Structures are given as structure tokens and as C-alpha cells.
Length: 460
Ligand SMILES: [Zn+2]
Image 1 (cartoon, protein in one colour):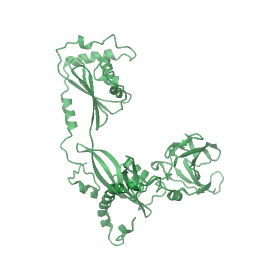
Image 2 (cartoon, helix red, strand yellow):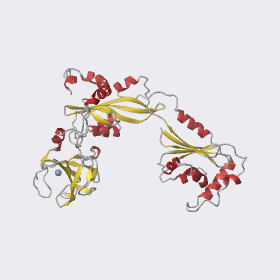
Image 3 (cartoon, helix red, strand yellow):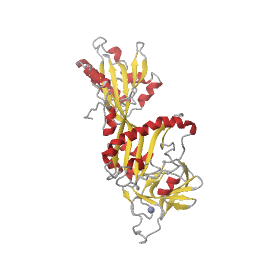
Image 4 (tube, helix red, strand yellow):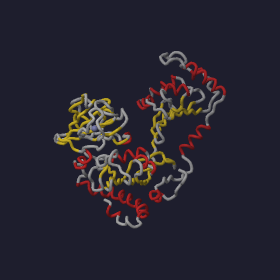
């Protein structure tokens, strides 16, 4: 964030953030102002302490009869100023806790909570959220603002007829395209973050190509990637990343590309530049790639049988407890335990395909149950004949074991862009691919000493 670049177009090529220089966040400014308005004359402090003492009774104690009339008993004229109290929701906080810390009575809270259905959302507070109270000199709540996040704020303010008015304020983040590219030296995560991608973006990229590339087993040194994604800014400050818009990954010399597209029904998916869906009937890796620790060597001598046993699957070493996903939509045909397999789950997908998951620590599906792609069916373990925690994964076509690494690529993709939608698809996505290619130019030019002269044309 130190380098403020003025020209957004430079950003991509340079692979850097390009935060816009804004003087100061309007929101932050008004918040600072609000804090300086905090008035706490000694009398108010005294009164506040008194209230806190009376309210620190257990909540079951009905507050109705006892101290319910602080307004009438309090001197009306002494305090005219508004007190602004900012509270951050802590772990385990209820609205009542916040009201207590702000020095407000439970009666005030119940009045707000009974003001309408919108007030119900105040019952669901998330740690880290900010609540701003405006309290008048009589200890009466004038307004409450709940800052859900930096983009949305709900406000309850007391009007002249003593009713609470509700308002939802929402801001839009500004989005700018950002570009990152990198080459695999160590691992997807190490080199992805070296290139400036967040873990979420790396996972998203792995997800997009999840049917084409096994990011646990297929990644090689020299593989490369480039990504165009949105960065979100609020008041000149980066607040997060949006979705990946276009991405390419070159794995062992083969380049895969994907673009994000929202069709005319409003459904968003990733497609090849030709309009084929990136989502296939099966995912390549039934375990999150971030959890897979190493290649599991199935060729070593079986510790129990001391022989090379025929190996019909793929093994993924991962810590015990790592979630295991169903590779595709289907129906659980077996969920059980045997001496060799340990805890195992078999899933049938359509007529022809079965996937098997062995040595599970726990199973979380029952026989006969329908499962969705990526639904958790159990966790990695080392039950049965297993030398360490790993998932043994098998893929069967018409009853025969097939290598999931090669078979999945041959299976049909989920769905392609309808021909009626093709013109719209191309109009929206071609600029994205063009943007990606334009960004890639400087890097290519740099490498283009001699032998790579034709690289750009041959890569596809
Ligand atoms: Zn195995």
C-alpha cells in the first residue's frame, strides 16, 4: 500500500496494487468526529455507574417494576448533550451486554427490540461488529447504529413521536481489475502468495481448474499462472478481493483458461473462452489441496503383507480429520467398515461411475443417502490397512478401475453456453481474455530472448 500509483492501467502490467489516493475516508472522518463529541461530565459518569450496578443482576430478574423509570426520576434539565458510545461486539456478547456497557437500561433495550421486525436482527451479533449508541442527557437512547461491516450499516433512530425509525445504509466498494502472474518453484501456495495472491484466490483458482488439474499431484516446477481479478476499494483503501475474472494455468506444458460469466438468468460460472463450462461431473481431488502434505507412495512394500499389493487408486496424504468430498453428485451405495478398508464410503454416480474413499477416520454419510459434488462424506484417517493418515481414492467406470487422473478429463463437461447466449457470452468475456493477454505481454517480451520466440503462438 505504500506505493500509490496514479495510473490504473499500469497496475496490471506491474503486478502491483494500485490503491487510489483519496484524502481521507468520509466514514472514518465522521467517526473520528463522533468520538470527539463524546461528552462525559462527572454527573453522567456517576449516574452511569449507578445504572450498571443496578443492571448487573442476573437477566432473569424482571426489570419491569424496579428501576424502570430512570427518565422521570432523573433531573431533566441538567444534561442536554448527546453522549456517543462506540462498542465492539466481543465473543459471547449479547445486545444486553452492549447496552450495559453503554450505560443504558434494559427498559431502553426492550423498547428498541419491540419497535419492529427489523430490530430482530440485533439479536444476531457477530464478534467484531461495531455498535454506536447516541444517548441523551437523560440516559435515553436516541439512536443505535450497527456496523455489520464497512459496507453496510443499520440504523435505528428515535423520531419526534418517540418511535424508532429503521434505515439500512449500504455502500458500494469500487472495483478495479488487478493482475498477478507467477511460476511454480515450490508449491502452488508458496509461489501463489509470492506472486501476490491471497490464499482465498489461490483456492479459487484451484477450484476453477479443479476438474482439469490435480493440484495435489500434477503440479510441476515451471508450471505458470496468470490471473485477472477484482480488488475492492473503499475510500481509497483496499478492503478485499472480488472474484477471479479471467485466469490461465499452464500445467506440464498444457494451458487451461477460464473466464467468469454471468448468464442472462443471473447464474455465474466459469467457462473456457470457447464457452464450455469449467465444472465437470467430477472434481479431480476429493480433498482440499491446501491440506495435502505430500505424495503418498503406494509402491513401497506393504508393512503388513511385505509385498507390492496391486494398487488401484490414488493416495493423498493429509492430516487426520481433513474433510473428504464426494467427487460428484451421486448416491452412497456403501458406508461401512472392514478390516482392510477401515472406514469406507462408496458413491455411485449415474449408471456408469463409482468413486471409493478408504481409510477414513470418520464417515459422515449413510448408505442410500444422496450427496452433492463437494459434499463432505467423511474425514481422512488411517483406519484399516494404512501406514499413515491418507485418503485412498478409487474411480471405477463400468466396474473397472480407471486412473482418475486421465479419466476425468475425458468425461463430458457439465454444460456449455447455449447457442442463443453465445454472442452475449463472447461480447462480455473476450475483453477479459484480451486483458489477460495484454497484461501478460511485458513478461513474455522479457523472456522472449531467442528460444521462446514462438511461445505465444504455441501456447494454447
Ligand atoms: Zn492406496
